[in-house]
Image 1 (tube, rainbow, N blue to C red):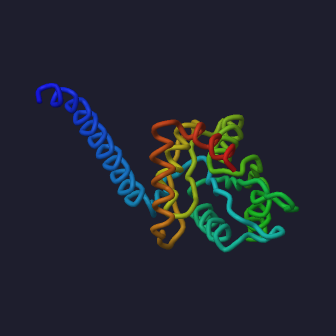
Image 2 (cartoon, one colour; image 1 turned 180 degrees about the vertical axis):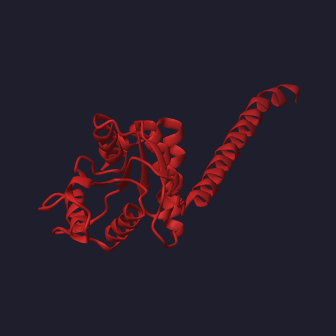
Length: 209
């Protein structure tokens, strides 16, 4: 009887350790979800060097409703004097004639922002790539701070990626609500990015894709 007890004890201990680990992971993900939710809809309009519009779909040079919403918000910020420059970002999908960044540039130029107040960054299909490329372009112009414009659910990850690539950032999102699916996806991305680093996670996702 004593031998059987000694043989079972390590198995029980391992099970308790596994359960405790699973509980900690679950708690970490839950806390991250509420942080993503709390950050969504942030609207900081403090003066900065540049307004950075994160890319979204465009259709043969015409911004999608999502991208147009971001561009309209950036135009409002620029008109309010938040920053003298607007940066439009985003590459193109295979077969596209235009990039997201160029579509955004044309849209804002048509709305009345002068060309010398616009900067197009077309390197980057992902949020990380867009912000890393933008950081490079800002730094060579001796610009360090930016307000990032995207949809509400995106806020927390945007700021953390900006910190990783060296942009002193705030966030001002478009109006609207975030779906549970969007919040869950962001929770997964933030949970992994904070542990592994956003660049590593982005490289891994690109490899999977």
